[in-house]
Image: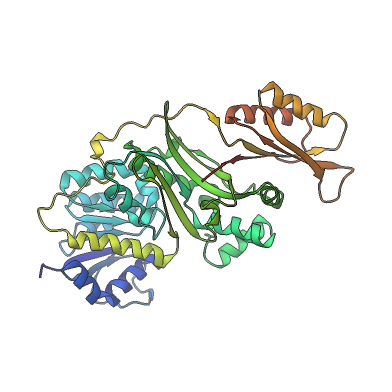
Length: 437
């Protein structure tokens, strides 16, 4: 049997402790699967005395994760610290430069420094595995890196944040407000004390930028993503979507166009009969459209200690199965130095149209003014409906518009014009509609 694979874990929170526990409890099974023992020989965290529910006494303790990354006691450095700078970045960089394999769940680090780290890994001939960084327990990275050879991807999209999907699911099922759902998500551990990173779309954007690089062979461009979160979604939007035959989901979408690559994160209305609409709660789903395979949908647990730990352990097992001298594949599916500069696509028409909700003063001329702003921007309307808000018929009305195919720029210009006209009593809502998928 080959020599044991020695693992160092940096970061012993929920995921790190779970990884250590599974490596201990499943040791015999992992040995059979990998053909060698996999043992934790070193750990690093901020508080050595904290009880983490797993015996780590046999592992060497390091206060400094960078020193652990360079230590002779390990073959694999597992980074579960988090953050795109500081000890996470410096320790991963140190591990790669020292010729250590790296496993990370850190999408923020990869979104910002992934290409540079990939260049180091490929130069040193070591692996940089990151299955846990995108969609938790769903093996989407392995699928795109290894199982889709010969396929040309045209579009990749999905539900990439369990917190947002949980909130939207409960808002629809129980008719409760966004704020009430968020508080419950925090209480249950699905959302952080500061949920901004999740609910405003940054988490989804980081994951999408990694999938974009894998799909299209471009350098990661997390800062070039159109991004909109779900904090502005109300029960009025949820009910209107249902009446129209749609369900609201926060989607990350990346697709190839004639002018470049389009990346966007935003709430989207999808048909209630579509597969993506059936993904509920904290579950994630990723759809990949290709020329050979057609559409592939991967769905499963997207967050939580067990799902993330499972993906981390899978990455460790892949390293354990490799042997000295084996030529590892490139980190992002193509050699890092050959990744093309990201070219942002030009604005184009959205075939599904848009849902627009306007809360307006109930007075003569408002309807006509709205219609004129739409016409001035060449927007054709599929439907327009109005009704009273909370029984206050004498004060204000809700106007719901559904457009035919048009551009984002035209819609935003029309809504800005309506706002400047002084007809609105509340912030307008604009949501893209996907006719299929």
